[in-house]
Image 1 (cartoon, rainbow, N blue to C red):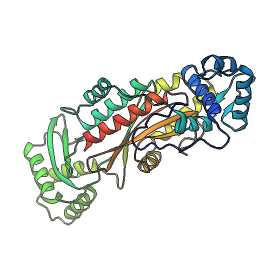
Image 2 (image 1 turned 90 degrees about the vertical axis):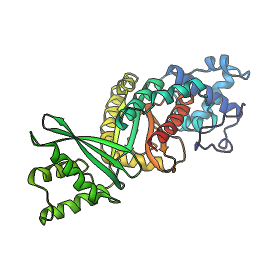
Image 3 (image 1 turned 60 degrees about the horizontal axis):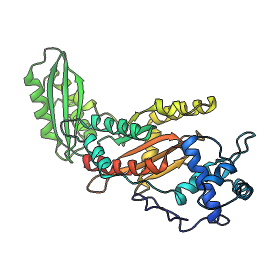
Image 4 (image 1 turned 180 degrees about the horizontal axis):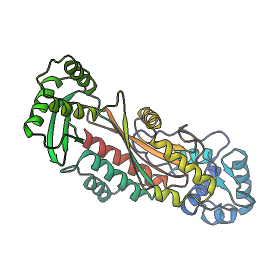
Length: 360
Protein backbone atom coordinates (compact mmCIF):
# COMPACT_ATOMS: atom_id res chain seq x y z
CA UNK A 1 0.00 0.00 0.00
CA UNK A 2 1.30 3.47 -0.86
CA UNK A 3 2.34 5.60 2.07
CA UNK A 4 -0.04 8.46 2.91
CA UNK A 5 1.11 11.86 1.70
CA UNK A 6 2.55 14.28 4.24
CA UNK A 7 -0.44 16.01 5.85
CA UNK A 8 -0.82 19.78 6.24
CA UNK A 9 0.62 21.31 9.41
CA UNK A 10 -0.89 20.06 12.65
CA UNK A 11 -2.82 17.08 11.22
CA UNK A 12 -1.51 13.97 12.96
CA UNK A 13 -1.66 10.39 11.77
CA UNK A 14 -1.63 7.11 13.73
CA UNK A 15 1.56 5.10 13.36
CA UNK A 16 -0.30 1.95 12.21
CA UNK A 17 -3.72 0.64 11.29
CA UNK A 18 -6.07 -0.58 14.04
CA UNK A 19 -5.90 -4.27 15.04
CA UNK A 20 -7.68 -6.51 12.54
CA UNK A 21 -7.38 -4.03 9.64
CA UNK A 22 -4.70 -5.37 7.30
CA UNK A 23 -3.46 -3.87 4.03
CA UNK A 24 -6.15 -5.65 2.02
CA UNK A 25 -8.98 -4.40 4.23
CA UNK A 26 -7.48 -0.92 4.23
CA UNK A 27 -7.41 -0.90 0.41
CA UNK A 28 -11.07 -1.96 0.25
CA UNK A 29 -12.10 0.67 2.81
CA UNK A 30 -10.18 3.39 0.97
CA UNK A 31 -11.81 2.57 -2.36
CA UNK A 32 -15.29 2.44 -0.80
CA UNK A 33 -14.77 5.89 0.72
CA UNK A 34 -13.29 7.38 -2.44
CA UNK A 35 -16.16 6.04 -4.56
CA UNK A 36 -18.65 7.35 -1.99
CA UNK A 37 -17.02 10.80 -2.08
CA UNK A 38 -17.22 10.81 -5.87
CA UNK A 39 -20.74 9.43 -6.40
CA UNK A 40 -22.56 9.35 -3.06
CA UNK A 41 -23.81 5.86 -3.94
CA UNK A 42 -23.29 2.47 -2.21
CA UNK A 43 -20.29 0.55 -3.57
CA UNK A 44 -20.54 -3.14 -4.51
CA UNK A 45 -17.94 -5.91 -4.71
CA UNK A 46 -18.01 -6.10 -8.52
CA UNK A 47 -17.21 -2.41 -8.81
CA UNK A 48 -14.36 -2.78 -6.35
CA UNK A 49 -12.92 -5.80 -8.16
CA UNK A 50 -12.42 -3.61 -11.24
CA UNK A 51 -10.74 -0.66 -9.51
CA UNK A 52 -8.72 -2.13 -6.63
CA UNK A 53 -4.94 -2.00 -7.19
CA UNK A 54 -4.70 -5.67 -6.16
CA UNK A 55 -6.30 -8.70 -7.86
CA UNK A 56 -9.20 -9.82 -5.66
CA UNK A 57 -12.30 -11.75 -6.66
CA UNK A 58 -15.78 -10.33 -5.92
CA UNK A 59 -16.29 -13.17 -3.41
CA UNK A 60 -13.09 -12.26 -1.53
CA UNK A 61 -14.05 -8.60 -1.54
CA UNK A 62 -17.50 -9.45 -0.14
CA UNK A 63 -15.83 -11.28 2.74
CA UNK A 64 -13.56 -8.32 3.44
CA UNK A 65 -16.52 -5.92 3.30
CA UNK A 66 -18.41 -8.18 5.72
CA UNK A 67 -15.48 -7.96 8.15
CA UNK A 68 -15.37 -4.17 7.79
CA UNK A 69 -19.12 -4.01 8.39
CA UNK A 70 -18.77 -6.12 11.54
CA UNK A 71 -16.00 -3.76 12.68
CA UNK A 72 -18.39 -0.81 12.35
CA UNK A 73 -16.52 0.80 9.45
CA UNK A 74 -19.08 0.08 6.69
CA UNK A 75 -22.85 -0.35 6.60
CA UNK A 76 -25.50 -1.48 4.12
CA UNK A 77 -28.13 1.20 3.45
CA UNK A 78 -31.62 -0.34 3.30
CA UNK A 79 -31.51 -3.54 1.24
CA UNK A 80 -28.66 -2.47 -1.04
CA UNK A 81 -25.97 -5.03 -1.80
CA UNK A 82 -23.40 -2.23 -1.75
CA UNK A 83 -21.78 -0.59 1.27
CA UNK A 84 -21.24 2.94 2.52
CA UNK A 85 -18.70 4.13 5.11
CA UNK A 86 -19.85 4.87 8.65
CA UNK A 87 -18.59 7.96 10.48
CA UNK A 88 -16.05 5.66 12.15
CA UNK A 89 -14.94 4.40 8.73
CA UNK A 90 -14.57 7.95 7.45
CA UNK A 91 -12.53 8.83 10.50
CA UNK A 92 -10.15 5.93 9.90
CA UNK A 93 -9.88 6.91 6.24
CA UNK A 94 -9.09 10.57 7.03
CA UNK A 95 -6.59 9.74 9.78
CA UNK A 96 -4.65 6.96 8.12
CA UNK A 97 -5.57 6.25 4.49
CA UNK A 98 -6.21 9.59 2.82
CA UNK A 99 -3.93 10.60 -0.03
CA UNK A 100 -3.69 14.39 0.20
CA UNK A 101 -3.78 16.50 -2.90
CA UNK A 102 -1.31 19.36 -3.16
CA UNK A 103 -2.02 22.95 -4.03
CA UNK A 104 -0.18 24.10 -7.13
CA UNK A 105 1.75 27.34 -6.97
CA UNK A 106 -0.86 29.00 -9.20
CA UNK A 107 -3.61 28.00 -6.73
CA UNK A 108 -1.65 29.41 -3.79
CA UNK A 109 -1.10 32.63 -5.68
CA UNK A 110 -4.79 32.84 -6.60
CA UNK A 111 -5.83 32.44 -2.94
CA UNK A 112 -3.35 35.09 -1.79
CA UNK A 113 -4.49 37.55 -4.48
CA UNK A 114 -8.19 36.94 -3.73
CA UNK A 115 -7.59 37.78 -0.07
CA UNK A 116 -5.35 40.79 -0.66
CA UNK A 117 -6.48 43.25 2.01
CA UNK A 118 -5.17 46.48 0.47
CA UNK A 119 -7.98 49.02 0.38
CA UNK A 120 -10.47 46.57 1.86
CA UNK A 121 -11.99 46.44 5.35
CA UNK A 122 -11.36 43.49 7.66
CA UNK A 123 -15.00 42.42 7.37
CA UNK A 124 -14.84 42.48 3.57
CA UNK A 125 -11.63 40.42 3.59
CA UNK A 126 -13.18 37.77 5.82
CA UNK A 127 -16.35 37.71 3.71
CA UNK A 128 -14.22 37.21 0.60
CA UNK A 129 -12.41 34.33 2.32
CA UNK A 130 -15.69 32.64 3.18
CA UNK A 131 -17.03 33.05 -0.38
CA UNK A 132 -13.78 31.76 -1.85
CA UNK A 133 -13.78 28.67 0.36
CA UNK A 134 -17.35 27.93 -0.66
CA UNK A 135 -16.44 28.17 -4.32
CA UNK A 136 -13.34 25.98 -4.02
CA UNK A 137 -15.02 23.28 -1.95
CA UNK A 138 -18.58 23.28 -3.37
CA UNK A 139 -19.73 23.41 0.27
CA UNK A 140 -20.36 26.12 2.86
CA UNK A 141 -17.36 28.32 3.67
CA UNK A 142 -17.00 29.56 7.23
CA UNK A 143 -14.83 32.27 8.78
CA UNK A 144 -14.93 32.92 12.52
CA UNK A 145 -13.15 35.95 13.98
CA UNK A 146 -12.93 37.04 17.62
CA UNK A 147 -13.95 40.60 18.29
CA UNK A 148 -11.17 42.90 19.43
CA UNK A 149 -11.04 43.14 23.22
CA UNK A 150 -7.42 44.24 23.63
CA UNK A 151 -6.01 47.66 24.39
CA UNK A 152 -7.08 50.55 22.19
CA UNK A 153 -4.53 52.88 20.58
CA UNK A 154 -6.64 55.49 18.77
CA UNK A 155 -10.21 56.45 17.90
CA UNK A 156 -11.62 58.89 15.35
CA UNK A 157 -15.10 60.10 14.33
CA UNK A 158 -15.83 60.97 10.69
CA UNK A 159 -19.09 62.70 9.75
CA UNK A 160 -21.08 60.87 7.06
CA UNK A 161 -24.07 63.17 6.87
CA UNK A 162 -27.75 62.31 7.45
CA UNK A 163 -27.23 62.04 11.20
CA UNK A 164 -24.52 59.39 11.01
CA UNK A 165 -20.80 59.18 11.77
CA UNK A 166 -18.12 56.59 11.14
CA UNK A 167 -16.16 55.43 14.19
CA UNK A 168 -12.61 54.35 13.29
CA UNK A 169 -10.98 52.26 16.02
CA UNK A 170 -7.31 51.22 15.97
CA UNK A 171 -6.24 48.60 18.49
CA UNK A 172 -2.79 48.09 20.00
CA UNK A 173 -1.87 45.61 17.26
CA UNK A 174 -2.71 48.06 14.48
CA UNK A 175 -5.95 46.37 13.39
CA UNK A 176 -8.69 48.77 12.29
CA UNK A 177 -12.42 48.37 12.88
CA UNK A 178 -15.07 50.64 11.38
CA UNK A 179 -18.56 51.13 12.79
CA UNK A 180 -21.38 53.52 11.93
CA UNK A 181 -23.26 55.30 14.73
CA UNK A 182 -26.25 57.62 14.88
CA UNK A 183 -25.58 61.24 15.91
CA UNK A 184 -27.88 64.27 16.32
CA UNK A 185 -28.66 65.94 12.98
CA UNK A 186 -26.70 69.15 12.46
CA UNK A 187 -23.97 68.28 14.97
CA UNK A 188 -20.98 70.56 14.23
CA UNK A 189 -17.68 68.92 13.14
CA UNK A 190 -16.01 70.47 16.18
CA UNK A 191 -18.11 68.20 18.42
CA UNK A 192 -16.73 65.11 16.69
CA UNK A 193 -13.18 66.43 17.04
CA UNK A 194 -13.74 67.20 20.72
CA UNK A 195 -15.19 63.72 21.32
CA UNK A 196 -12.17 62.07 19.67
CA UNK A 197 -9.68 64.23 21.60
CA UNK A 198 -11.45 63.49 24.86
CA UNK A 199 -11.39 59.73 24.30
CA UNK A 200 -7.82 59.58 22.97
CA UNK A 201 -6.58 61.35 26.09
CA UNK A 202 -8.01 58.51 28.20
CA UNK A 203 -7.62 55.46 25.95
CA UNK A 204 -3.89 54.70 26.20
CA UNK A 205 -3.35 51.11 27.36
CA UNK A 206 -7.00 50.51 28.21
CA UNK A 207 -9.54 48.16 26.69
CA UNK A 208 -12.86 49.54 25.49
CA UNK A 209 -14.81 48.13 28.45
CA UNK A 210 -12.32 49.90 30.76
CA UNK A 211 -12.65 53.16 28.83
CA UNK A 212 -16.42 52.86 28.86
CA UNK A 213 -16.49 52.52 32.65
CA UNK A 214 -14.08 55.43 33.12
CA UNK A 215 -16.07 57.75 30.85
CA UNK A 216 -19.35 56.75 32.48
CA UNK A 217 -17.92 57.61 35.91
CA UNK A 218 -16.61 61.00 34.72
CA UNK A 219 -19.88 61.92 33.03
CA UNK A 220 -21.88 60.83 36.06
CA UNK A 221 -19.67 62.94 38.34
CA UNK A 222 -19.74 65.94 35.95
CA UNK A 223 -15.94 65.84 35.74
CA UNK A 224 -15.82 66.53 31.98
CA UNK A 225 -15.97 69.66 29.86
CA UNK A 226 -18.19 67.95 27.29
CA UNK A 227 -21.54 69.46 26.47
CA UNK A 228 -24.58 67.24 26.24
CA UNK A 229 -24.38 66.65 22.47
CA UNK A 230 -20.67 65.73 22.51
CA UNK A 231 -21.16 63.46 25.50
CA UNK A 232 -23.82 61.66 23.49
CA UNK A 233 -21.34 61.11 20.63
CA UNK A 234 -18.80 59.69 23.08
CA UNK A 235 -21.35 57.33 24.59
CA UNK A 236 -22.58 56.18 21.18
CA UNK A 237 -19.03 55.55 19.98
CA UNK A 238 -18.22 53.39 22.96
CA UNK A 239 -21.56 51.61 22.98
CA UNK A 240 -20.71 50.19 19.56
CA UNK A 241 -18.52 47.66 21.33
CA UNK A 242 -20.77 46.71 24.20
CA UNK A 243 -19.95 43.00 24.43
CA UNK A 244 -18.11 42.11 27.58
CA UNK A 245 -15.67 39.21 27.41
CA UNK A 246 -14.77 37.24 24.32
CA UNK A 247 -17.33 37.90 21.60
CA UNK A 248 -17.01 36.55 18.09
CA UNK A 249 -18.43 37.15 14.64
CA UNK A 250 -19.30 34.53 12.03
CA UNK A 251 -19.34 34.85 8.25
CA UNK A 252 -20.92 31.91 6.42
CA UNK A 253 -21.20 31.63 2.64
CA UNK A 254 -22.54 28.86 0.42
CA UNK A 255 -25.32 27.42 2.58
CA UNK A 256 -27.27 26.67 -0.60
CA UNK A 257 -24.45 24.42 -1.81
CA UNK A 258 -24.73 22.31 1.33
CA UNK A 259 -28.52 22.21 1.29
CA UNK A 260 -28.57 21.12 -2.36
CA UNK A 261 -26.50 18.07 -1.44
CA UNK A 262 -28.85 16.97 1.34
CA UNK A 263 -31.86 15.16 -0.13
CA UNK A 264 -33.39 13.36 2.85
CA UNK A 265 -35.93 15.45 4.73
CA UNK A 266 -34.75 14.41 8.19
CA UNK A 267 -31.19 15.41 7.31
CA UNK A 268 -32.39 18.71 5.84
CA UNK A 269 -33.97 19.49 9.22
CA UNK A 270 -30.66 18.70 10.92
CA UNK A 271 -28.80 21.07 8.60
CA UNK A 272 -31.22 23.87 9.42
CA UNK A 273 -30.59 23.27 13.12
CA UNK A 274 -26.85 23.36 12.40
CA UNK A 275 -27.05 26.83 10.88
CA UNK A 276 -29.15 28.10 13.77
CA UNK A 277 -26.60 26.81 16.28
CA UNK A 278 -23.70 28.27 14.31
CA UNK A 279 -25.27 31.70 14.63
CA UNK A 280 -25.46 31.29 18.42
CA UNK A 281 -22.71 32.99 20.40
CA UNK A 282 -22.16 29.99 22.68
CA UNK A 283 -21.58 27.62 19.75
CA UNK A 284 -19.09 29.98 18.11
CA UNK A 285 -17.06 30.28 21.29
CA UNK A 286 -17.05 26.49 21.72
CA UNK A 287 -15.88 26.13 18.14
CA UNK A 288 -13.03 28.56 18.77
CA UNK A 289 -12.08 26.54 21.86
CA UNK A 290 -11.97 23.35 19.79
CA UNK A 291 -9.77 25.00 17.18
CA UNK A 292 -7.36 26.32 19.80
CA UNK A 293 -6.65 22.75 20.88
CA UNK A 294 -4.92 22.04 17.56
CA UNK A 295 -1.85 23.36 15.77
CA UNK A 296 -3.40 22.86 12.34
CA UNK A 297 -6.35 21.43 10.46
CA UNK A 298 -8.98 19.57 12.46
CA UNK A 299 -11.68 17.40 10.92
CA UNK A 300 -14.99 16.69 12.64
CA UNK A 301 -17.19 13.97 11.12
CA UNK A 302 -20.85 13.73 12.11
CA UNK A 303 -21.36 14.33 15.82
CA UNK A 304 -17.65 14.24 16.76
CA UNK A 305 -17.37 17.93 17.62
CA UNK A 306 -20.32 17.77 20.02
CA UNK A 307 -21.59 21.02 18.49
CA UNK A 308 -24.27 19.91 16.06
CA UNK A 309 -25.36 16.38 16.94
CA UNK A 310 -25.63 13.64 14.31
CA UNK A 311 -26.26 16.04 11.43
CA UNK A 312 -24.68 14.01 8.61
CA UNK A 313 -22.09 16.66 7.86
CA UNK A 314 -18.34 17.07 8.19
CA UNK A 315 -16.45 20.18 9.25
CA UNK A 316 -12.85 20.90 8.24
CA UNK A 317 -11.47 23.82 10.23
CA UNK A 318 -8.08 25.38 10.97
CA UNK A 319 -6.91 28.19 13.26
CA UNK A 320 -5.65 31.44 11.74
CA UNK A 321 -2.56 32.55 13.68
CA UNK A 322 -0.76 35.88 13.45
CA UNK A 323 3.00 36.43 13.47
CA UNK A 324 3.02 36.14 17.28
CA UNK A 325 1.36 32.68 16.97
CA UNK A 326 -1.80 34.00 18.59
CA UNK A 327 -5.09 32.67 17.24
CA UNK A 328 -6.98 35.49 15.52
CA UNK A 329 -9.79 33.42 14.04
CA UNK A 330 -10.83 30.15 12.46
CA UNK A 331 -11.28 29.19 8.80
CA UNK A 332 -13.28 26.20 7.67
CA UNK A 333 -15.68 24.36 5.41
CA UNK A 334 -18.94 22.62 6.34
CA UNK A 335 -20.29 20.03 3.95
CA UNK A 336 -21.82 16.57 3.67
CA UNK A 337 -19.70 13.67 4.92
CA UNK A 338 -18.79 12.92 1.29
CA UNK A 339 -16.86 16.16 0.79
CA UNK A 340 -13.57 15.87 -1.07
CA UNK A 341 -11.25 15.72 1.96
CA UNK A 342 -8.09 15.37 -0.15
CA UNK A 343 -8.88 18.64 -1.91
CA UNK A 344 -10.44 20.62 0.94
CA UNK A 345 -7.90 19.96 3.70
CA UNK A 346 -4.91 21.63 1.97
CA UNK A 347 -7.14 24.52 0.79
CA UNK A 348 -8.37 25.22 4.33
CA UNK A 349 -4.86 24.85 5.75
CA UNK A 350 -3.31 27.31 3.30
CA UNK A 351 -6.19 29.81 3.49
CA UNK A 352 -5.94 29.86 7.29
CA UNK A 353 -2.26 30.70 7.05
CA UNK A 354 -2.92 33.52 4.57
CA UNK A 355 -5.69 34.97 6.75
CA UNK A 356 -3.42 34.70 9.80
CA UNK A 357 -0.75 36.76 8.06
CA UNK A 358 -3.29 39.36 6.94
CA UNK A 359 -4.82 39.72 10.39
CA UNK A 360 -1.36 39.81 11.96
